[in-house]
Length: 186
Image (cartoon, rainbow, N blue to C red; front, side, top):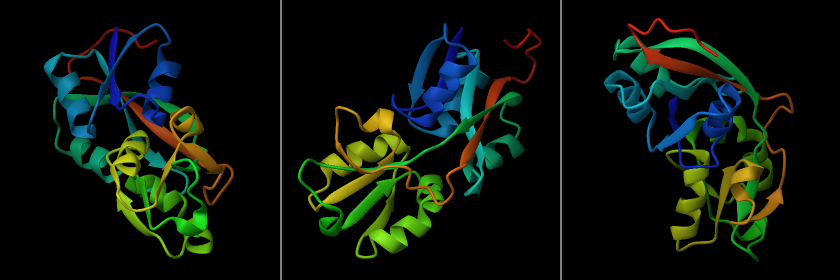
């Protein structure tokens, strides 16, 4: 089975897809819309996308695409604890950070932390939490990324962990299938 997910590797969506089926071929895509399209077109048998979080509420892109009846429908759910960390390039301290990159949902989930600890930094939306690391690396200013610890390991220095505003933050992911798919779900 091939499962499309919001990539790149290192996203919470990848972790949810692996939990759904640890033996599947995982296909990272750059947008939630691309995951819906991959399932609708048959490029992937399943898709895993974020649907809502404890702190951030519904993920607008997913809700909009479900409402548009794209040919992909929700056929399952995965609840995943989502612990965010703040990562920077080596040697950049929190007081030096001028811009923080992350997926809009993660920025909402860490709002209190950002207001308390990085009031000098502007927030900039990335396509995913893992893509935030790429944005941080390309930025000419001192920058940080909000991402998973797994995504940051080996790529950036983690300067703060569990920065979400509630320690029990959870994201519900939905498993997409073609609207006519009838085979059993794992």
